[in-house]
Image (tube, rainbow, N blue to C red; front, side, top):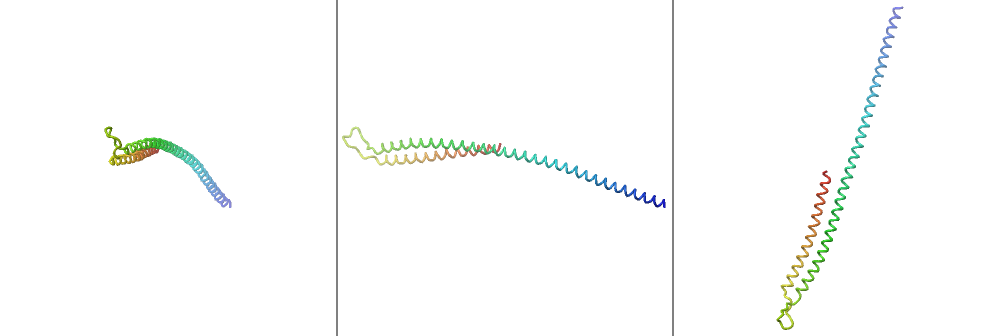
Length: 165
């Protein structure tokens, strides 16, 4: 019976050792899992901070670009307004000049040696004055269009350069 009791003690001890090993392995696995969870948590925080910083940089760049383009747009509008004012002044001067040419072209040709009265206005002068007046008006329109196009093109180039910095 003592031999049988020794065998049971041996089996019980072996079972106890196995149980301890099982608990020890479970504890080790649990410790390892907790360690991995801490590392994952730290990585998540690191990536979240990196994402916040990247978003802040992107917003800053977007704001810089918006400010640059808004400045270019305002500058182009100011230049177009100045060109329009210059064109209006030139158009006014051209209008006065056309009126003077029309007035002179309608006057009859006078010869200082002629006695009284005068000839009717020369039709060729009237046609020439009308053609010159139309050419001047068309040239003014083309110049205004060219100025606006040049300013718009320069603004477009400046906007592209500000975006590519």
